[in-house]
Length: 172
Image (cartoon, rainbow, N blue to C red; front, top):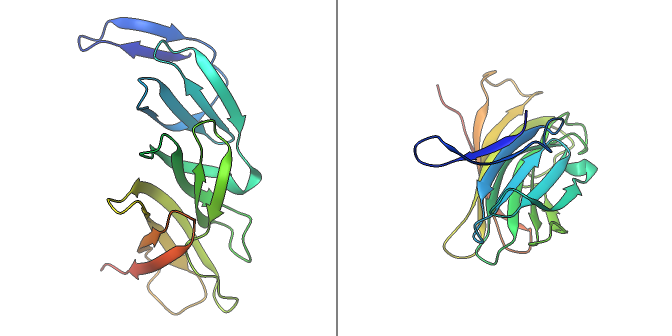
């Protein structure tokens, strides 16, 4: 078990076996040539040789990260699922962290309404050309007489963590 970097022919460039007991859900190559990995409860930054530069435990409100992207300023934006909001068992979150993994803000882009039990998962997040963020995912509104199918979810968040708008789309 571990992490392996290969060249274009599949030959091993380096191997790091420090990851045998760390579950990762997403990762990417960073602007500095290194790598960032995110898992259920951890965030790990590697240099370009696969050596750990730093690691952080994720806050409890980021209990199910699904996607991470690097921002133009060298920080990161993360989305996924949390179980710490209102009545919902699962709720979409987005969080902005700096280049050292410190949390700058956390956002829950779907508006809370005590009349509805809204559950959802953030699936992907990207920085937009205007310096804000777009989050995609899926939501369920459990106590409405709606189709059981999940609604596609799309939200725009500003660079301070405030929701600019959010929309849901029902297919089928």
